[in-house]
Image (cartoon, rainbow, N blue to C red; front, side, top):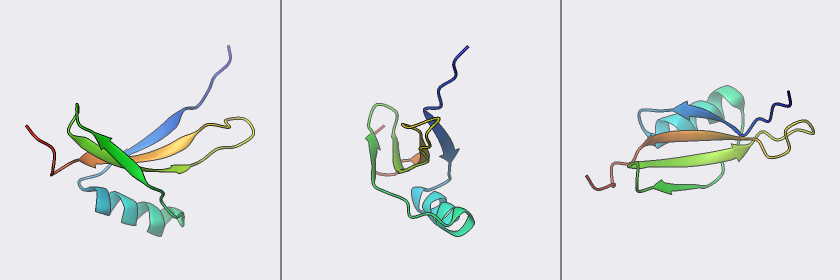
Length: 69
C-alpha cells in the first residue's frame, strides 16, 4: 500500500483566529487562500511539503460570514 498525504485541516471559529493560532503555535507564515461558495467556507493555506509528500499542505478553514445562505 502506498499512502499519499494531501492536506491536513484545522477548522476554526473564524479564519483570523485560525491564522493567528497557527502563526503563534507553529511559527509559520500562513499564505493566501480562497473561498468555497458551494460550502459557505473560506480558507488560508501553507505548504507542509516534504520529499515523502511533495504536494502536502495545511489548510485553515472557517465559515465565511460573507457567504450567502
